[in-house]
Image (tube, rainbow, N blue to C red; front, side):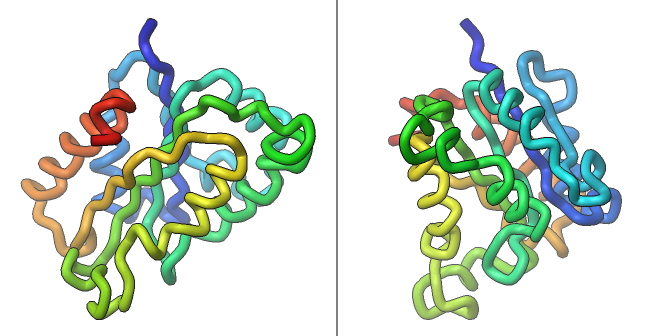
Length: 181
């Protein structure tokens, strides 16, 4: 049985992001992959919790794609986490609906890879900076898979972004066993 993947893009202005558009477009035509634009779906920030929880139940792997803003995710995605991943549903007593689900964080950064290392321009590695999101998803009984990062997204050439898009599509469709290596 083929894995069903849901990609939740959380970019406040996706039309202006060459990098995030390229990543999303790499998934066009992929069977069993649903790509959603959170800012387009919820322009007034009123999240349909029941709909979102139902979608989470229907998919095996959930990918959160977003630009890395001030060492975190954009605010609508944070609100999505707060509203959708509720006590008694996603965690706590009776909160086992996401058990066995796989989660991938896919981010774009404006800066270079060497800026995201211990002692670098940003002081910490991407893995360290993304830890609160990882902790949230693990707390919800999910399996946190390796992060996907496109560095220098703001300055990437078309060829670079095309290469990253291919790498992204492969990454999110790769089996858990391969990703865990």
